[in-house]
Image 1: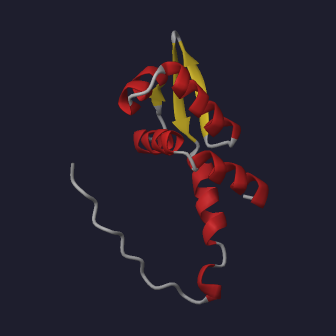
Image 2 (image 1 turned 180 degrees about the horizontal axis):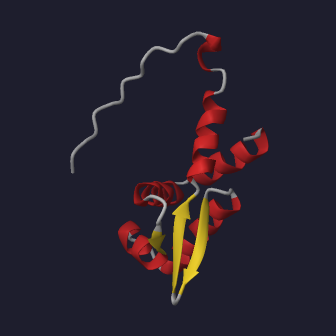
Length: 108
């Protein structure tokens, strides 16, 4: 991933609703989610969801496909991994990185 694409992706993710939508789509996996189901899960209106998904799509982070009356959205996992790779390129100055411990997840 180049700097321009990384900036676009980070800019798209720097808004709460878009970040929540993207994380939901990542959790849904390659199949994705229908737009209506995603809107309900996020507690936003379909027009608001469309606005936010357009921002994610313009940044190359999500893709849509029509399936009858429904539009399904999925996260572009290759783009997500490309962004993580860009951010961690040459991590630790070429030295082996220490194991990173993930913080414990809060249970709902």
